[in-house]
Every structure is written in structure tokens, then in C-alpha cells.
Image 1 (cartoon, rainbow, N blue to C red):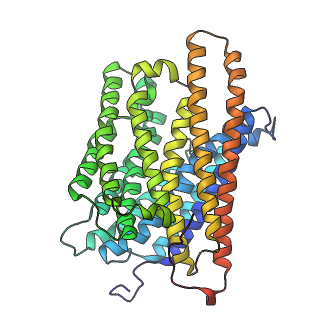
Image 2: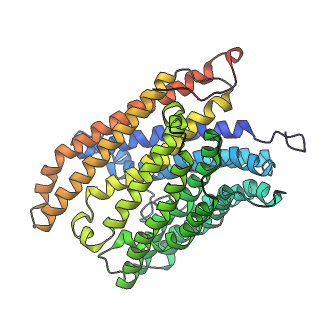
Image 3: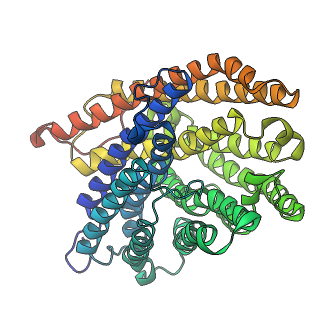
Length: 460
């Protein structure tokens, strides 16, 4: 309990955001499967403008960022910040207002995209009438959950709070820059450069710092040992702050954007690999002597699988941003595979770990089935691996066909087996996720009398 008599953590808010995250994950995965069916020529809504594949794809990407990931990260912060500061959030009523407003924003985004009101900004397709609401919502959210950090009487802030505060400072600026500057004030190649910054900074300055902050909070608690090196955690933080904002133009290499900007983005992207290495070393140093936790604690398994995915993602970035690689993979399915690894195989896996760790605590009941948790992990992991490798292979094949000036139709025909494999891998992830959500539903439905203190399940 907080000093005011309020609970330190508003369990209801955490549960609500986790539930909303799960709901929007269902929305995005259905949209993703529909778009995959379009590529195999089996789309179930041909000629239906409201469900045209281009619009459905934007629902898939936007709900990944704002529905699934944002809700889960908010839930994680609502759980972690009060515990780290010993202070509750500013106002519970404001917390519920933000929750319902955010879900309304996500619903309005889905409806607006399907009705054709998208902006011509990659990952910023949110309809223009939604953007002001997002900005207001972000400001209110920061006020509500940053207040306990500012009120904290701790002499030093743990690195998790460093990451959170940086995300609070960056996210509103990134969203405003990406959704307003190219649309209204900065046309042409300069606007494209800003769009590239937005695409990358939405991931690197919003999702990444909050995600790593949560890892620095949960991993030491679950392993019951301190983080291996506080110095390395600070190097990782400052490296992210210094190098990440300069990378965005690498999304538009070989474009009319000035080459000095493109070269700077390439150098910054390669440099961030050094920073990523320090973070990965820090977490695996923490795991040293507790490798049994990967087998016995399911949330740790999700967290560390995501960290391996992050290391692969950034190593891949260091190569694929070179102009030599770009000459082959530019605009190919390689890029799609890379995006799925980082957004689902890293941040999505961390969120699945949050579900596993927090759901029994917020509903006050033990997991209904540990076997379903195991099925969820393996179907999701194997499905992602198949999708990632498949799309990388498809991208290389497409790039060489285009380089050799084959007819576009030839690359489409050659891509068809890869697109079928992609659909199959998506179905694996869908079935695995269905196992999780059924498990969550059955766990919440159990009689309260059966509840015991939530314990991490031992799993195979």
C-alpha cells in the first residue's frame, strides 16, 4: 500500500491494458493472415473496397505498434514504476480515462484505415483526425506515470527508470515529427528523410527503451540476482540515445536524399551494433549460473529468446544497410522478414513473457495449463523462425532476379512457394497465440477459491 492508503499498483489497470493488448494482437494477426492470403491468390474478399488488402495491411502494422505493443508496454510500466519508486501513479481516474481513450484511438484508427482515410506516411498512416488525440493521450500518460518517478525519494534512479524517462521525452517528439512535418510542412526528399527517421525512431526511441527498461526490471527479479554490470547498462543507455536518432535515413538508401545523410545513417547503424553487444553481454552475464531458468521459468525463456532475436536483428542491420547489400535486397521480402523478427521476435516475445509473468498475478489465479504455455512458445518460435528464414530467402531470390532485369511477373511466380510458406508459418503463430489466449481466458474463469500465490510454472 502507498502512504496515502491507495494500493501501490493499480492491478485493474494493468489487467485492462494486458487484455486490450491481447485483443489488438488478435486483430493484427487476422489482418496479417488476410494479407498473406492476398499474396497466394486466395484472398477471401476480392473486390470489397472496405477490406482491400492495402488497407488491411495498414491495420496489421498500426495495431502492432499502437494496439498490441503500446498497451502491453503501458501495463509493464504501470507494474514496474510504482515498485521502483514506492509511489503510485498520479491519479487512478486519469489512468482509466487514458485507458479508454487509447482503446478508442486504436478503434478509430482501424475504422479510419478501412474507410480509406490513411496518411501517406509509412507507419504513420493513422488518420489525420486521430493524430491530435494521440498527442494529447501521450502527454496525459507521461504526466500520470512519470509523476511517481519525479516524486521518488530514492537517491539514485535504477537504469529501468532512465530508459522510461528517455522514452517519455522522445515519443511525443517523434510522433509529432513523423505525422505532421512530412504531411504539411516538409515536402519531397526532405520529407522522406523525416519519414525514415519516424519509422526507425518509433521503434528505437519508443518501443526499445521501454522494452529494455522492462527487461532490466523483470530479469533480475526472476533470476534473483542483480544485473551483471551497472556500468554496461549505462553504456547501453547512452549508446542508444546517441546513435539511434541518426539511423532512420537507412530506410531510404539509394534515394534522392543527399548521400551524406545516407552515409551517416549507415555509420550510425553499424555503430549501434557495438552498443547492442554490451547490452546482450550484460544480460547473458546476469544469466550465468542460472541457465536452468531458461528451462524452468517460461517468462525468462520468452525474454531471452527475444534478446537473441534482438542480437540477430541488429547484426543483420549492420550488414543490410551497406549499399552493397541494398543493391540486392532493396524493396524485397528480405526487409519484411527483418521487420517481423524485430517487431514480433523481439518486442512481441518480450510481451508474451509479460503475459506469462503478470497474468496470474493480475487475475489472482494460477495458470490453467502449463502445457498450453509450452505449446504457445514452441509454435510461436518455430513459426517465426520459418517465416524469417523464408522471407530472407525470398528477398535474395527477388533481388537477383530484379538485378538481372527479369520480368516482374517472373519474380512473382518464383515468390509464390515462399509466400505459401509464409502463410503456413503465420498459421503456426496464430494457433500458438490462440493457445495462450484460451489459457488466459480459462485462467481468469477459475473460481477465486482455487487461487494460490502466482508461481512461475515449470515447463518443458
